[in-house]
Each structure stands twice: as structure tokens, then as C-alpha cells.
Amino acid sequence: MVFISIVSACLILFSIGGAAAKVPAIIVFGDSSVDAGNNNQISTVLKSNFRPYGRDFFGGQPTGRFSNGRVPPDLISEAFGLRAFVPAYLDPAYNVSDFAKGVCFASAGTGFDNATSNVLNVIPLWKEVEYYKEYQTKLKVYLGETKAKYVISEALYIISLGTNDFLENYYTLPNTRSQHTIDQFQDILLGLAEKFVKDIYGLGARKMSFTGLPPMGCLPLERTTNFMNGNGDGCMDNYNAVAMHFNGKLSGMVKKLNEEMPGIRVVFSNPYDVFMQIIQKPSSFGFEVASVACCATGMFEMGYMCDVLNPFTCSDANKYVFWDSFHPTEKTSRIIVDYFMKHTLNQFL
Ligand SMILES: *[C@@H]1O[C@H](CO)[C@@H](O)[C@H](O)[C@H]1NC(C)=O
Ligand SMILES: *[C@@H]1O[C@H](CO)[C@@H](O)[C@H](O)[C@H]1NC(C)=O
Image (tube, rainbow, N blue to C red; front, side, top):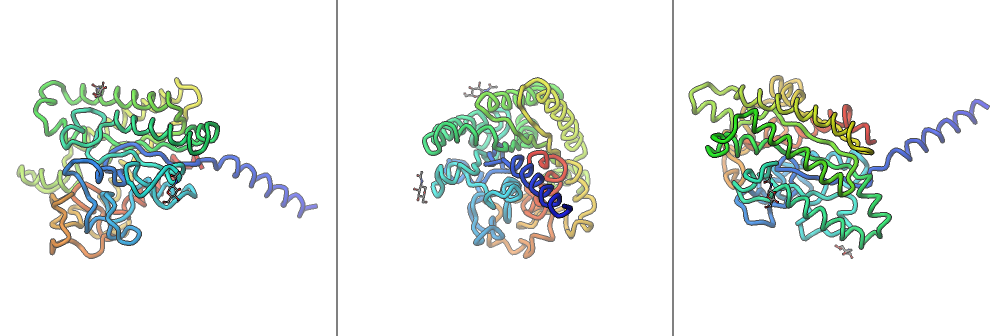
């Protein structure tokens, strides 16, 4: 009797688990924080499909990910029992049979604002959505209408961008700064973020993880700028304050969207606090260095300046919080993903 009820309890648990575990695909929009190599196929200087990028990826392969290894969507895909990486939509090595389980439309250097993607001639967010529409058409041919609709509505959408709108655009282009105060600019971005969510919702997306901004004032490149300006080599506190403020607004937007849009489930995955803890106490997470990056001098290099022949590049990226002057190592990404899996993405497991 006891045995039978244990068995039936297990069966019930199993079937609940089975019914809920229905994220059939991971679909990614955003910037270099999540780009899996779309920029390899376009004409921009912002690329990373060469060594030492990817030296800890499968086969030591440089894929166009801005990391020594994998980026967060790859780790999330694996955590959901899907493929151990999410391929880039524009990568000719993959086709719709791969993309049916995961696809990345992200482009390094992009932002919510069209002016951001114009800076380095990368894929604007609206064009990522155009590619997504094209993907839906291909998916329907490949899987049939019913199955394709299932994938589209049950997939987990990862949305990760915004840092470039501030660092590449607002704080770099005098034109943007002369037109808007930082508060006005944040509200413009928020409007664009909301419009984006509504656009993909209109196309069938329902489960989303909207990612917040990291402590962008602590990126090694920003520390270097701080240092050049004679302010010591600490984090740029004002950039961090903007990131926190913007994250507050995004969190409010996510709450509102969940209330307003029938059937939507958006979580706000905020990396700020856990990332800041890593930067402030790297040794408690097994790191040795948080202020400079592994690649080259670690102070300003990324992309083509992160050169395989640079004698300063570190030998063990696991000791470093940052891989290049703008991007975390795989190990840092893993800690952040583990945090999301526990606090926000667990909703979709
Ligand atoms: C996708 O590519 C694989 C080989 O890489 C091939 O076997 C398959 O037929 C292709 N599928 C489609 C739908 O084009
Ligand atoms: C961004 O550019 C696209 C294509 O030109 C355009 O359709 C869209 O309205 C622009 N977005 C904004 C906010 O101006």
C-alpha cells in the first residue's frame, strides 16, 4: 500500500514535471552579451571570430561569441535540457532543423535606439525582429503550422541589451546628449523596450526573460576611462547609478506588461547585484582579478585589439571576472545564469 502510493506519487510528480517542462526552444534577441556570431556575417568591425576568443569553447573554436567560452543563452539552453549552445541565425553552418530548438538573432554593438546600431554598423533591433519573422516562416514549412506555433508560443525568449545605448551612444555621441537629459533618454529606451516586447508578443512570443543592465561602470574599459580622467581606477559610479535606475524602470515595465497583456509571462532577470558582488569580492567566487580583463593588457582591448599574439593575455580565464575590457568570462556568465535559474528562470522549468 505504502509502496503503491509512493509509486503513484512519483507518477504524479513525474507527469507534473513532464507537463511543465515544455520550453521547446530558446530564442535570443540582444547585443554582444548574447550574440553567438551573427556579426561574423555582416560588414562591421565589431567581431570576435578569431583567437583568443573561443579558446575555451567546444573545440577551442572562435565563433563570434564575445567570450573565452560560452555566453549565457548557451548555458541556459543546456540548463533547460536543450542543446549546449544556441546557434546564430546567420551562421551558414546551421539550418532550421537546428533553429527549431534554439536560435540567436543578437548582434554585438546593437541597442534599443537605432542610433546605437548605426555607430558600428551592426544589426538594429528592428532587423532582428525581421529575421525572427523570416525564421517563423521557415519553421512553419519545416514543422508544419501547428507544431511551429507550439514552439513559438512555448519557447523561452531571452532579451539582453541596453548597455550600448548608454556607453556607445548617449555617453559617446554629443548629438544624443545635446537632445536629451539622461532621464529623458532612459524613458525613450524604456518606450522602445516596451514596444519591442509588444512586437514579439504580437508575433506569438509569450515566455520571456528580460535582462537588466550590469554594473556597467565597472567594466574594465570604463575603469580605464575613469583613470585617464584622473579619477583613480575605480568604477564609474555615475554609470552604475544610471544602470540601477534604468533597471528599476525596466522592472516596473515588466510588472506592468504581466498585468496588461493576456497570457504573457515575463520575468525580469537582473544581473546587477550578483555581478556587483562578484566584482567587489572576486575571491569568494573563486576569481583572482576583477579590475582588468584577461585579454591583452585587460584595460581597453576588445574585438580586433584582443589579439592572440599579445603576450599579456592571461593563461587561465577562470581567474578573471572579465574576458575582454567589455565582456565577462564564461565563468562569470555561469554564476549569473545559475543565479537566474534559481530566482527567475525556474518559473519556466
Ligand atoms: C539541415 O542540415 C543538415 C546537415 O547539416 C541536413 O542533413 C538537413 O537536411 C538540413 N535540413 C534542412 C531542413 O534544410
Ligand atoms: C528605426 O529604424 C527603422 C527602419 O528604418 C524604422 O522603421 C523605425 O521606425 C526606427 N525607429 C525609431 C524609433 O525611429
